[in-house]
Length: 271
Image (cartoon, rainbow, N blue to C red; front, side, top):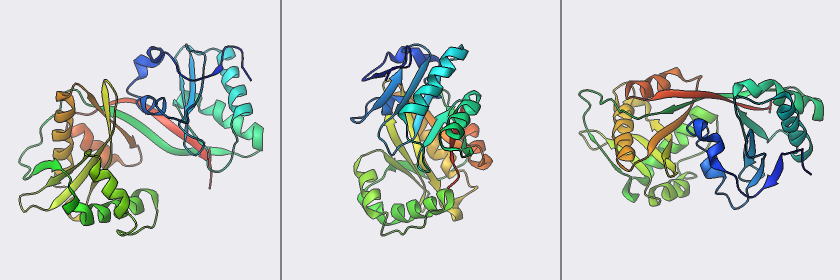
């Protein structure tokens, strides 16, 4: 089904969201997906997801009209099954429309699951007097990294898992060559960070984690500083998505030169 100019497509002109390319950095990854689901008018609206079990990302420009909003409403209402697993990532200005779609379709209220902020860094600021060095993770680090991944999932997502259960995933992260660690002067791994995706102009970092006993010592900031320098030397601007409910980590990013590039809401049903 087509909703006026809003069509099911296989690709789009990426220039239409160029001004928001940092805020919507993840679209570059979604648009590469083998199972891409994409609706767009190639001018004002992009609705996409990489597979049925991933979040629906919705980009809208700042001149979106009432007719455009109605097209978006109709497309979401008719083309997407609304259940407890689906979420929509949007600019905050679109919050009421998405909540209305969900309410009208299934009669249930939705909520903001994650209040996100996008940061990018073009001029890293070097922290002072932090001991240690950055290096690519290797398989000799797998036990520590798997433990850190399990602890991070518990702390951030309330997911109970174990070091053993995270071993295979950690092995994949290490073997990708995109997982980096900070080791202090004693050779202990204090912090980790992962370059999740590289597009032509940007690189997205996630899975940033510091073990509790090493926090408030500047290790994560130093890792982000060195990693950001490396990515900038590749010709890519480093980007991170953060949760606004964790001001301490956001403050750490700002200290090493990261600047806000726009907020996003993830909307879904209460589980």
